[in-house]
Each structure stands twice: as C-alpha cells, then as structure tokens.
Image (cartoon, rainbow, N blue to C red; front, side, top):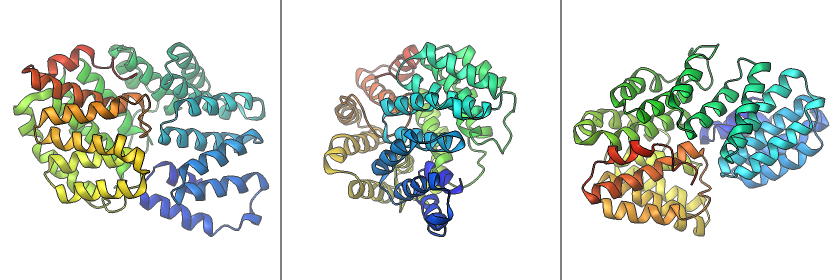
Length: 373
C-alpha cells in the first residue's frame, strides 16, 4: 500500500522509495493474487507506466474483494496519468462488475472511482448519480466528492460546487489527503465568479499550506497562480511576483528528476515566471529524453514554448504554438479536463492580448466551456 501510494503521486523520489519497498518483499511471501500487483507497481516505479497499466488491467479481471479495489484504483490512476479517459471508464465498469465480491464500503469507494471516469468522459448525469451513491455509503469519500465537484464545475454551477466543498463532513484538516486540491477547486470557482482577490486569499491561506515538500501540492499552487496571472492584469501580476519566486524555489529542489509531463509543464510555468531559464531548459531536456520524439515534438515542445512565450509577453508565438498542441483530440499529458483547461486559457488569453482586449473579459465569460475540448 505504501508503494502504491508512492507511485500514484508520480514523483521521482516517491517512485524510488516504492522500488526500495517492493524489492525488499520476496514475491513468494505474498498472497498469489498480489504478486502481479507487485510487478505492476515496480514497472510503474521504474518508469514504464503503459506496461504497468496493462498488467493491472489484466490482473483486475481475475481479482476480487479488497485486491480488486486496490488493483482497480491503481489502474484508474495509471489511466489518469496517461490521459486515457476511456481506459478509466473501462476500469470503473470492470470494478462495478466485481462489487458483489467486496465489502459495502469497498463497493462504495469503487463508485467514487467510476464517478470521476464518467465525468471525464462527459457523462455528467451518471457521474453525479455514482458520486452521490458513493457518498451515501461512505460520507468521508473525498474522491467521490471530488468527482461531483468536477461535474458541477464543468456545468458552471458555481454555487453548488462551493456548497458541496463547504459541506464536506470531514472538514479540511491538515491530514485530509486531498485538502489542497479541493481548496484549489474552491479557488477556481471563485475565479469563475470574478472574485480574484478571494481566490488569491485562498491561495495564500490554504493552497500554500503544504503538508510536505513535493510536486503533488506545488502543481495546484502553480495552476492557480498562472490563472490569476492571466485574469488579473499588470497590477495583479506585479503583486504575484514574490509568490512566483517562492514557487520556483520549491520546484528547484526536484527539477533534476521529473518523471511526469503534467508536472514538467507546471514546473516550467514557475521557472518561466521567475525567469530561471536554466531550470526551465533542464525540465525541457529531461522531458525530451523521457518521451517519444513524436509526442515530445507535437505536444510537449509546443506547450513548453507557449508557456515561455506567454511569460515573455510574446503573445503571437504563445497563441500559435499552443494552438498546435491543442489541435490533438487527446493531449495525453495527464491531469483532468478542468486542469488541462489551463492551456486553453493561455491560448485564449494570448489571443485576447493580440486583439487589445482584456483576457479577464474573455475568460470569465466562458470560464469552463472549453474544458471538454
């Protein structure tokens, strides 16, 4: 379980820890059902996520009970990190077929996984039903709540999204595993209402109240600050400058060994805004070495270049190169549709600058309508 949690964070240090944990466990000492899971997590930790995903999907077909939930969750997170929404949906449906082998609590948790997959595939009605069914069984299921909030944000129902987060029964103590990410969602709702000052306050008081050092939590900070940067104008941008320096400093401690495109892109935003192009170039070089040439040049490189150009106020270049990447039906960079919308926002903000209009007027008028593209 510790190794599984480590790899799903998609951080190089946590993956190294997972390898140490699993290599210390002899396969013969495990229940036979868990041996393929060990091999899949090892493959993931060593950087071969597609192979790990295939092993998990195969293992899920013959799983039952708690092992089915663990295997299904890992397959779900692998699909998420690969940007494979249909794969997530297939995993969710496979889990529902195994509900009869699970405890009631485990079956409810599987509903929460299915809810998120349905939302990412655009099936909002079934996603809400699945999320609410999950929470009726497990009121503390923050992942099901997260799926419901995603739907409400995609439907632009800001009030319902805020209320759902505010009424979460467990509150938002430091031990809550998704505390920072749910506060990020709350701040995104505030942006949709034009409440930039309140969103910044949310950033200062909650999103940066980290529980540990790591890209998992820094990503949300970058994703919120970049949106504030686009919507707030020059005066707001000047006010955010110290926050960018702090964020870039945080990312610098693990810039040498990134292993996930979505983290790479957000690290690049922090380094671009802090004007640290030595670390920016290191991130790009690492991504080029790790990813296939076709994927790097058609998706990663244009997004990196668009980020750098936007930070340098070269809006023509930014809009042009980001548009090239967004022409693909699937970006396959990981992250949810709501998270990936940051690149649509950036392209649209660059276009707005070129037309001489304010990005805030453009973006707040359709704050989430582009997330499904």
